[in-house]
Image 1 (tube, rainbow, N blue to C red):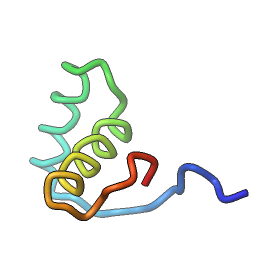
Image 2 (image 1 turned 90 degrees about the vertical axis):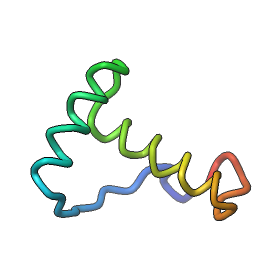
Image 3 (image 1 turned 90 degrees about the horizontal axis):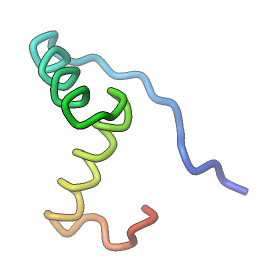
Length: 54
């Protein structure tokens, strides 16, 4: 069975990291959960993600 989550390593600008940490904390989410949520929303809004499990 394919794992539902996969670890990745990315490099982000420090100002972006700082802002995401604040937003994630305000939303009571981890940094990783917040990034996942934002990316999923972007993909859905742009028609690139149709299956909610994707």
